[in-house]
Image (cartoon, rainbow, N blue to C red; front, side, top):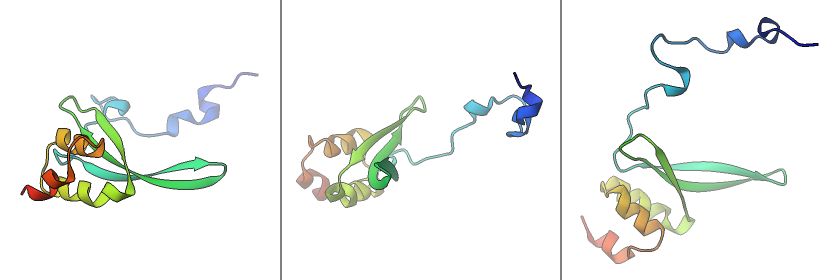
Length: 105
Protein backbone atom coordinates (compact mmCIF):
# COMPACT_ATOMS: atom_id res chain seq x y z
CA UNK A 1 0.00 0.00 0.00
CA UNK A 2 1.42 3.35 -0.97
CA UNK A 3 1.29 6.22 1.49
CA UNK A 4 0.63 9.85 0.72
CA UNK A 5 3.02 12.62 1.73
CA UNK A 6 0.54 13.87 4.35
CA UNK A 7 0.59 10.47 6.05
CA UNK A 8 4.40 10.46 6.20
CA UNK A 9 4.53 13.91 7.81
CA UNK A 10 7.00 15.26 5.26
CA UNK A 11 5.47 18.75 5.14
CA UNK A 12 6.46 19.49 8.74
CA UNK A 13 10.23 19.25 8.15
CA UNK A 14 11.35 22.89 7.98
CA UNK A 15 9.99 26.26 6.92
CA UNK A 16 11.18 27.44 3.52
CA UNK A 17 12.47 30.98 3.11
CA UNK A 18 11.10 32.59 -0.07
CA UNK A 19 13.75 33.12 -2.73
CA UNK A 20 16.36 30.82 -1.14
CA UNK A 21 16.40 27.09 -1.80
CA UNK A 22 16.93 25.07 1.42
CA UNK A 23 20.06 23.36 0.10
CA UNK A 24 21.58 26.67 -1.06
CA UNK A 25 21.42 28.79 2.06
CA UNK A 26 24.13 31.45 2.31
CA UNK A 27 27.33 30.20 3.93
CA UNK A 28 28.29 31.60 7.34
CA UNK A 29 31.30 33.92 7.34
CA UNK A 30 34.55 32.04 7.96
CA UNK A 31 38.14 33.11 8.38
CA UNK A 32 39.97 33.36 5.04
CA UNK A 33 42.71 30.95 6.18
CA UNK A 34 40.40 28.23 7.54
CA UNK A 35 39.66 26.40 10.77
CA UNK A 36 40.34 23.11 12.55
CA UNK A 37 37.48 20.68 12.98
CA UNK A 38 37.21 17.57 15.16
CA UNK A 39 35.31 14.66 13.63
CA UNK A 40 34.32 11.14 14.58
CA UNK A 41 34.55 7.86 12.65
CA UNK A 42 32.64 4.81 13.91
CA UNK A 43 34.25 1.44 13.24
CA UNK A 44 33.13 -1.82 14.87
CA UNK A 45 30.78 0.05 17.20
CA UNK A 46 33.65 2.19 18.55
CA UNK A 47 34.22 5.91 18.09
CA UNK A 48 37.56 7.20 16.84
CA UNK A 49 38.18 10.96 16.95
CA UNK A 50 40.39 12.79 14.45
CA UNK A 51 41.24 16.35 13.44
CA UNK A 52 41.05 17.99 10.04
CA UNK A 53 41.96 21.37 8.60
CA UNK A 54 39.11 22.98 6.65
CA UNK A 55 39.03 26.01 4.39
CA UNK A 56 36.81 27.45 1.66
CA UNK A 57 38.00 28.35 -1.80
CA UNK A 58 36.75 31.38 -3.77
CA UNK A 59 33.78 29.38 -5.09
CA UNK A 60 32.59 28.47 -1.58
CA UNK A 61 33.59 24.79 -1.75
CA UNK A 62 34.82 23.49 1.60
CA UNK A 63 38.06 21.51 1.43
CA UNK A 64 39.15 19.20 4.26
CA UNK A 65 42.56 17.68 5.07
CA UNK A 66 43.32 15.20 7.85
CA UNK A 67 45.82 16.58 10.39
CA UNK A 68 47.97 14.31 12.55
CA UNK A 69 48.14 14.93 16.30
CA UNK A 70 51.74 16.14 16.16
CA UNK A 71 50.82 18.94 13.71
CA UNK A 72 47.65 20.27 15.38
CA UNK A 73 49.38 22.99 17.41
CA UNK A 74 51.47 24.18 14.46
CA UNK A 75 48.47 24.33 12.13
CA UNK A 76 46.55 26.28 14.81
CA UNK A 77 49.36 28.81 15.09
CA UNK A 78 49.57 29.08 11.28
CA UNK A 79 45.84 29.89 11.18
CA UNK A 80 46.31 32.49 13.92
CA UNK A 81 49.19 34.05 11.96
CA UNK A 82 46.93 34.21 8.87
CA UNK A 83 48.96 31.91 6.61
CA UNK A 84 47.42 31.24 3.20
CA UNK A 85 45.52 27.93 2.86
CA UNK A 86 48.02 26.87 0.19
CA UNK A 87 50.93 27.10 2.66
CA UNK A 88 49.01 25.33 5.44
CA UNK A 89 48.08 22.56 3.00
CA UNK A 90 51.74 22.19 1.94
CA UNK A 91 52.80 21.96 5.61
CA UNK A 92 50.21 19.26 6.38
CA UNK A 93 51.34 17.21 3.38
CA UNK A 94 54.98 17.55 4.47
CA UNK A 95 56.18 19.76 1.61
CA UNK A 96 56.85 22.83 3.79
CA UNK A 97 59.46 22.65 6.54
CA UNK A 98 58.65 23.34 10.19
CA UNK A 99 61.53 25.85 10.42
CA UNK A 100 59.86 28.01 7.74
CA UNK A 101 56.58 28.03 9.65
CA UNK A 102 57.91 28.78 13.13
CA UNK A 103 60.44 31.39 11.96
CA UNK A 104 58.01 33.63 10.08
CA UNK A 105 55.87 36.24 11.74
